[in-house]
Image 1 (spheres, helix red, strand yellow):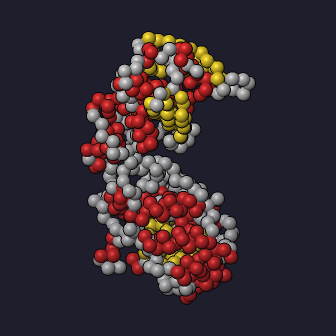
Image 2 (cartoon, helix red, strand yellow):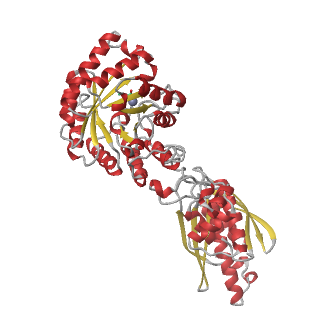
Length: 520
Ligand code: KIV
Ligand code: ZN
């Protein structure tokens, strides 16, 4: 290793082997090829493409990935058995840079499975690593369950593997048992103790059973490991493996205390994360570090205000650096006026302070009823903002409807400052409501259009209702939005009537001129 290579950490991705091994995460042949290409393009140094002896499909995938590989080393996994190693070599041999990775469980629990004594296992390791090295000059050896293997025996077998020709020694924490201090210490002591350790690369392979996979991998690097084994989104057996995006970004962001580099183009992280989530069928949890939906989202008023003033207040890395277009400030019930104003500006809506105040009140009311307020919701609120003092205002509406008969609407309205109520039946809840409105405010306007849109997704979506009325050649439209379609309908109808009243005023006709008798 040259001086400049000393602090370069090799990224070994095992999404297609350990990741694909997690129950339910099986990928198709084409999906594996696609993910391998993305890994290669993003600068992964070594791709563990599969376990060739495991199935015909695995063999085909590893062979084809090997043939198509560009820059990455292509590695296949093999148990400590000669036929496994031969099959693995057959699959990877056409890669520009092939690697054989062979392993055996060395802890007491794992030695008991093939029922081998320490000496018998040592002999097997010597024989299989030698065989692999005779086929390929790039051989990785792993003592599976290394972190629960007796220290003396671990040193002994690592030395045997190095002498037999292994070029990388991987120390797996197979069951996610170790902790950061121990992880660093184990690698450091192995490098200090085992003869020949300076001539090989030490790798760390951590599982996340106690949620420490990333911390353990980084600690191992501080202890001297220079290869991290990881997967996209932390996919892997049980609780998964070290997540590639986490270790890579940790090294990038905290270079001050971990001065190591990788060859990963971090801007490609988000895309591959989404593809792996899709093809594996394992969605990424919302609050997952780096690639979760909420990793760069801020909802609370204080955070949004801070972010609008200086992104560094609440973000330690730029979303662009991991391939996300930008920070998201989703509006919700915790958002403040600054975030609402910024959102309106982004949507091209310019409002004065008073109008903002009004929209903000409506927004808070909506946010209380809805988990997330989308851009379209905001636009609907702006549209629904009333134009000055309205003659007619909805105070209360209750509708009873069902399969058994007509719907019944009980409506309370303020009309020119006076509270009035009416009950009406109708053919469905909207018809009953509109009839009740006409009872309280008789008019001969014809309903020309009634339209409902769900402006956002989900059952708590806002409905935007548009109503167009025509009266003596005068047209008035009204719009409103609410999570309750009937309430939105009532408000839109009243909105249109209010506009009609204003127009009548402008044409010299007063609302009071139209009496109950005029209603047809
Ligand atoms: O977790 C583990 O021990 C493994 C080995 C095969 C390296 O995945
Ligand atoms: Zn593993």
